[in-house]
Image (tube, rainbow, N blue to C red; front, side, top):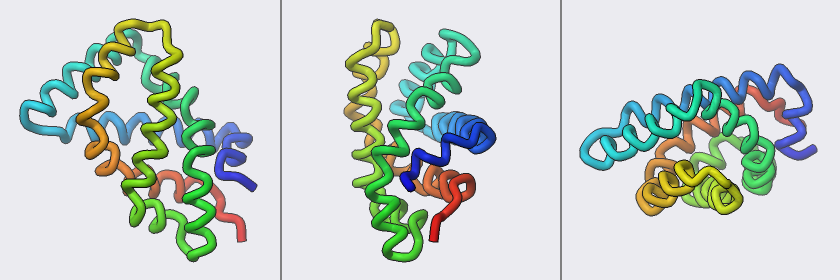
Length: 147
């Protein structure tokens, strides 16, 4: 059973979308300094598209994100703790996450979103790595771990 199979349960999917959206909001709000201002401004522009844009984007990305993370999750299951494995391998985890968003952004027709993403892409890898523990714990809290 793959990690993304958990999304077949609508309740799990809804909770993951809500919690991931909250995690993103918290990560952006916690960012300080000049790069934080840029990130907050850009995030505000994207959120300004509409109140459901971020949750909708999370919902659309979640199946691909979980599919991309599944090999690491499976390694973690073999090692005994998939959540801790994602955390310990946060660089690989972040690369997997950014690979999904990079592919998605190339296909978007929304010029504002594409431009905003491309401006921030070079600087966000560290931010994504910093978010990995929170994301790993969210996944672990919502996705049943098969024996």
